[in-house]
Length: 497
Image 1 (tube, rainbow, N blue to C red):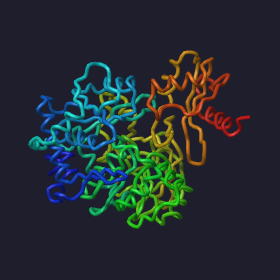
Image 2: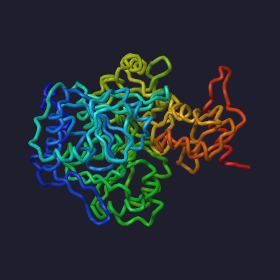
Image 3: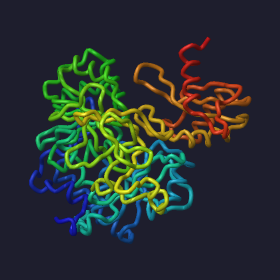
C-alpha cells in the first residue's frame, strides 16, 4: 500500500496472511485464554466489514461503538474501517445524557451496542453486538483503499470549555504510531504485550492491540473482572514480555506483593497520568525491570517518552520520540530555550496529529500558533533533551488516568436540588493518588449529591470526596479560583479538624 492507496485496518493486519495460526489476541482468564489467531482475526474483521456494507451504509458514515471490554470492540472498530466507514469508540460507562450529547455531535448512521450499555436517545439505527458477530462467517470484504489523509476514526476528548469534543483522525495516524514502537514501547515481532486497560480506552486500543498487530506481536488482554492482584500472575503464566497500563495498575500490583517471578518481562509502559518517581523506583527494585512513561493527548497520541533504548532520567517524562518535532513556547508562541518552562507544542505537520475537531474549525484554529499545535501542557526541557511535565495550563483534571473537565461535572451537579453553587477539583489522598472532590453550597447533603452524580455522570467523573463550604474562592471577576479551591480542600482533607 502507498499513502494514496491506504487503509488503516489493512495496515494493522498486514501480517495476518503470513502469520496465519499464530496468536494475535489472547483474552486471559484464570483457567485459560480465548485465543484469536491472525488468520481468524482478519477473517472476522473482513466478514464484519462485508456485513456492514450489506446494511446499505454510505462510504464515510459514522458508526458509534457502545461496546464493553471484549473482542467485539476491536473487531467492530477494524471491521468498520476496513469497509470504509468511520468508527467512533466511546466509554461504556457513559450515561444516557452523556452519550446522547455525543451522538448529537457526530450524527451516527449506526450504533453498535452490547446489552446493558447506555444508548443515546434520538431513534438512531441500532445493531446489537450479537448480530455483528454473526457476520464473521461472511465472505471477506475488499479493503476500502484511499488517501491516507482521509478521516479514519473519531475519538472524544475533553476541551477547556468543559465539553467533550470529537477529534477526527486520519488513516495515517497508524503510520505515525511506528515512531512509538522504538521511541517508547521497544516493541518487537516476537513480543507478548499485556495491557491492563479496557479495550474501549484509546490507550489500550493503540498500545495494547493495534501496535502489537502492526508489528506481528501478540496482544494479551485480561478478561473483564480481573482483579489487579491477579494481573502479575496472569502476566507470568502467559509469558508477557511487556506490560502496559496506567500508574495505578502498577501500584495495585505492588500492593498485592509478593509478586511472582516474571522471567519473560523486559519492561513496562506507563501512560494516562503522571508516573510518580517513587512508584517507578519501587517497581524497579521489586521486579528488576524499568517503567517507561509516555506523554500524549487524544489529538496526537504519545510523542514524549522514555524507552528501553533511552530511559528517561528519574523525575522526567522522557524525550521527543524519533521523528517528532516538539517545542516549548512562551505566551506569544515563540520557542523557548532549555531550562525555561513553557507550553508544550507539536509541529502541525506531525503525521499523528488530528485532522481537526469535527465541525469546529474555530476550535481547531484556536489550538494552532503558526507552525505549532499547542497541547496545553506545561513543561521544562533540560539541556540533555529530557522533558519534565509541570502540569496542565488549562483546568483539565486527570484523576486515575481519566481526563475530566471540571466544568462538565459542575454543570451536572448544579442541577441537583438544594445545590446553590459548586466547584470541582482534585485532592491527593495518598502520594501519587488523586481523586475528584466537590465543594458545594446549599442544603443538599452528600447522599443526595452522590445519588444525583450517579444518574448524570460516568463513574470516573463522579466526585469521591464532598466538602460543604460557606463560599467558593473567586477572583475579582467572580471566576472560580480553582487553584485556591484545590489548596483549601487539600488542607481540609489533610486536617479534617
